Image (cartoon, rainbow, N blue to C red; front, side, top):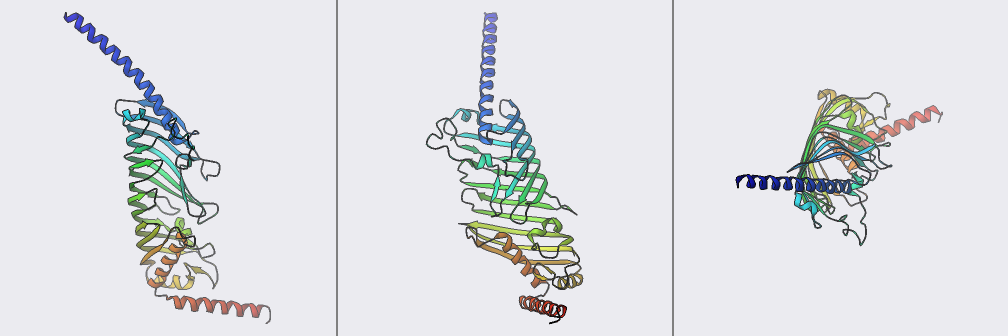
Length: 365
């Protein structure tokens, strides 16, 4: 009797093992299809290992489109996905509890108009029409939590330079979620820390807050410590102005976007600032006469701390975040150095008269 019971149990276990193996096989195949579907048809996946409570995906690569400034939109050495396995077979929603990404690379492109683009094959898909969703292509995906570690992000910013200015963030650790695809509705929390790479020095960046990707409403606190002014100078000065040889920037900014209106009070500190030589009497830095800035910086041991506020409507075609930042910070720095706008105007007028006088002498008039 006992022998028959053991044999029956053994047979049942074998049948269960076969059922599980078959189920895992089909689940892995389903998940692979889901991943490719989400990342785009050009994505590459090395291997998928399906366990009892998590799925491990290795060697993921999403090539960038032809107009992208980098070769890859996304790379990841290892991704561990903890899905709701039952929801993988649902026609209504795919739910992912957690995604942990290790040793990843993400490229972000900011267009000349200031629009941020990332993962275009995933986030810029066009609706498939009335048939969307009949074959699973329109099934929404809910991701509760995403964590990145030991990763890097590159921002290519065409709004400040041509070719696009490159900023690189390394040693990145980030957490965000929840994310609802494809509608992107709901608040997504955001926590980021990393090391902005510089030409002469590296800094420390932390970002915390939330953003609603669909409406673009957000509340975000940003803190940059020891940022390299050489790498950041396209955001502070115009192309024709005096450049920076070295220096550091500390920035604290609390930004709120509501119904496309930005309000962002903050503070900035410039330290160990050394400007490039040359440019003559008409040379300027952040809209101020270079000579005046250099002289006052010497009195302040190369350190300036100022307060400012950015305000404007993001949907106003006349509003430029880059220009607003340059203007507000430049004005605040001028006030911090004791240079009034009236003085700047007089200085500009005096410089123009001086140049006119020199030209008249040169041509004998």
